[in-house]
Amino acid sequence: MIIRELKSLNQLQISQANKITLIEFAKSHGYILENGGRCALHAKHSGGLYFFKDSNKYYHFSTDTHGGPIDFVMQFWNMNFKEAVAFLLESETPRFTPLPILLKQPASSFFQTRHPTIGESLGIS
Image (tube, rainbow, N blue to C red):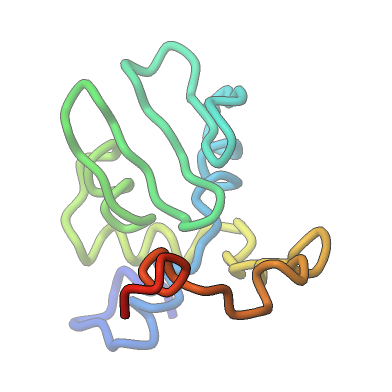
């Protein structure tokens, strides 16, 4: 059954649609992305459209709009909520999986030990 024929959407479908990897979705629909900073990709010729790698969100400076995959499709494909969810679920785009934050090296011993406060150092406690 095609999802667009459904009368209503459930939370699982909405959650799955929001897990579509927004960057991959944008690339597969013709957006040319370039490095836009440490955590973002900028869509060329887009009026300030940025995609954020770590949060699976977008921000469009020209229209001051932002959000996740469903919001993106609603804004740029001019669809309502139900149509946007169906469109995303029918796409072949991979799902977003947040990456764990890995430290390049363990915290130094300075940060692992307690140091006296300024007051303690001056004898004021």
